[in-house]
Image (cartoon, rainbow, N blue to C red; front, top):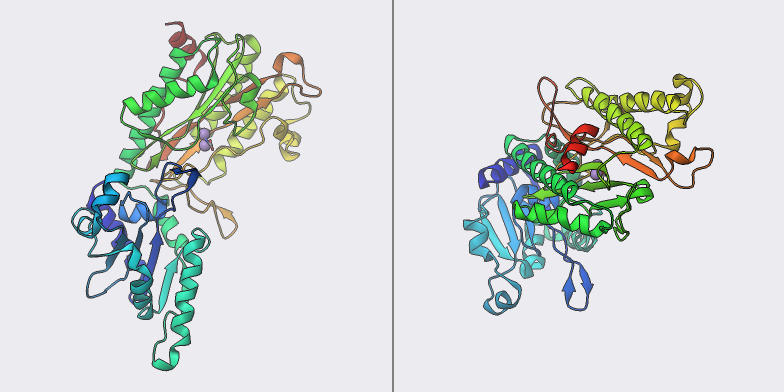
Amino acid sequence: MNQTEFSRRRKQLMRMMGSGSIAILPTSQTCRRNGDVDHVFHPDSNFYYLSGFPEAHAIAVLIPERKHGEYILFCEEKDEQKELWEGRRAGQQGAIEQYGADDSFPIDDVDDILPRMLEQAERVFYVMGAHPHLDSKLSQWINRIRSQSRNGKQGPLEIIALDHYLHDLRLYKSRSEIKFMRQAARISCAAHVQAMRLCKPGLYEYQLQAAFTHACSMQGARQQAYPTIAGGGENGCILHYTDNNDVLNEGDLVLMDAGCEVDCYASDITRCWPVNGRFSEPQRQLYELVLQAQLAAIEQVKPGNHWNDPHEAAVKVLTRGLIKLGLLKGTPARLIKSEAYKKFYMHRTGHWLGMDVHDVGDYQIDGAWRVLEAGMVLTVEPGLYIPRPCKGVARKWQGIGIRIEDDVLVTKTGHDVLSSAAPKTVDEIEALMAR
Ligand code: GLY
Ligand code: MN
Ligand code: MN
């Protein structure tokens, strides 16, 4: 992402805030793994959306119409010794020259400098509850200013939920955001293909995961957008399975839900395939039903339709199909009303996708489902999950978990499936695995 885009976003937000306002956005905190080792750092999405700044220990501040510059970045100081041990830092000069800050201060000085900026503001825009360490500091600063009101210091009168403003901006993807999301999806599709090629009975689920991440890294994507789900057989029925420690067995399906991230933009793709390369008859019947449901749901992704239309389409196809296969008994209308399908399909058909895999943005406005508009990106991911044992269900269906998930952009005229390069018909998958 180039600096112009970050600058455009900051300006857009500052226009919404108006003068007399201050916005405060910290990045994520580092998180201790054990001993002297931290978990891999990932910047806070709201912070990164406005700054593009990749380092830990930083706070971005926006003050519309401030004379000495509207965008202030607090970050680590240059320090030769620390950089020798921990890696390079931009420092104050880098914050200004490389990251477009108007002004920059050492993060260690934030307790002195930020309260003075707060004194001048009438409104604070802040995401409450996401960064507890700063929540308490902020209320201390504000209380201190208020206690000095006899000295003529008034301080901010209002604290406004910044999430509401930012999340709506983040929901509509710009051209360059779509470019990154397309790239993330393209890389993940190629990695799914690679995993299908390598798959065989006797391989461990974590080895399939390694094949996926290796393929992503080799194409330039260093991080995954979420922990990979690689579940063979009935492990495919565990919705957020991440143990990935079982062996893949002859005769089972494997469900792989995996997606890399490119410049902090996520992909989220699920494919299922037979471990030995050939679907059994019951596996094929269930798989084709899920695929029909997914295609029907994708058809509903177009401007003017509402958020729930794809889900309703998927539920209709799945319920009818389950009746046909003898897995449900009754009429479609009744079974949909009583939500009988939830025995085998217990999650919803998708979510917003963007910087976060479950991205921000409201799904309803004033109690009504949100209308889809060009520039929104969502996943479409129906599934069927029949664990072993499963009461009242013929044995041949048991131990089969299937989900098919694609990343779909709403366009002016309909939709564009960003992840279409990963094969998903029975014939395509069997042909690929036979090679
Ligand atoms: N990978 C999580 C999901 O599909 O929502
Ligand atoms: Mn997924
Ligand atoms: Mn998903």
